[in-house]
Image (tube, rainbow, N blue to C red; front, side):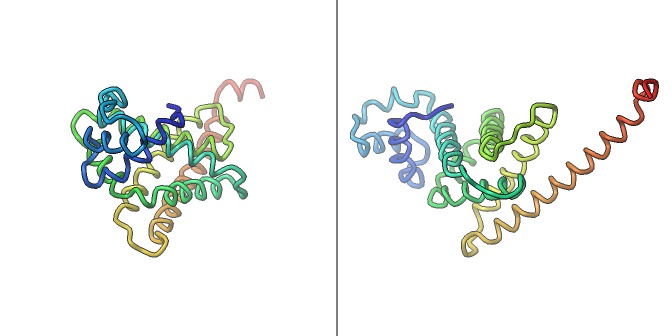
Length: 203
């Protein structure tokens, strides 16, 4: 989902209203007025209601994260860590809006939308760091990172430590866990290849 400039303006005006009014038409009407548009357009903008607003908000955050992550240096894991840290920093002022979004996404029937949002962010992170994988690891990397991102996001919501130090430490532990699993998977795949009958016959 690509968010255009006009929609981004509405979303930026909407988020400050969410802590008071939730992801509602009331909040959207106020946002449209603040963005210089007619509040009556609320029935046309984000006609899908709260779910559409929330998904657009996260999509815009993905776009801004990718833009801000350009030029990061270091190894792949370091760039992934830096990109996720950057994402949390960019959203630091939106905690209550994100808390309300996740509460809404926890409602019955919203699991597919939540999964789609988390998967999109995981994909955006790998894109931002220049991941070039095209095999089965493309899926496993995104599934693993999606789980890490969601767990970190939930931890971050209640973190009051200076500059979210505890959240970053939590993120480091989760990324280290992915690294250990990846090494085990690569070792297993290598051993499996050695045991394949076709390879033995070829030898």
